Length: 95
Ligand code: FES
Image (cartoon, rainbow, N blue to C red):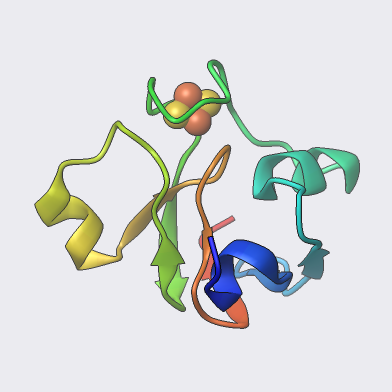
């Protein structure tokens, strides 16, 4: 993993509240949101079940899950926040 998205941190903006939360390298979006008190659903935390699916408003997800089909991943309109990251410095989620 040498690309920026794999090694670097990024920011998530919560579309509904406008909150911006930093996601450091090595931490999942899910963990950071839970730590920040954001109410999000999850189950497997490994990208298999689809429970944590969130809608992407803006930005480019770096899909790491095994739930979405390849064509769904290519649309970049939803993301599994338990394991996927971001290729863009800012990811805006419908949360
Ligand atoms: S919690 Fe299962 S895919 Fe994210």
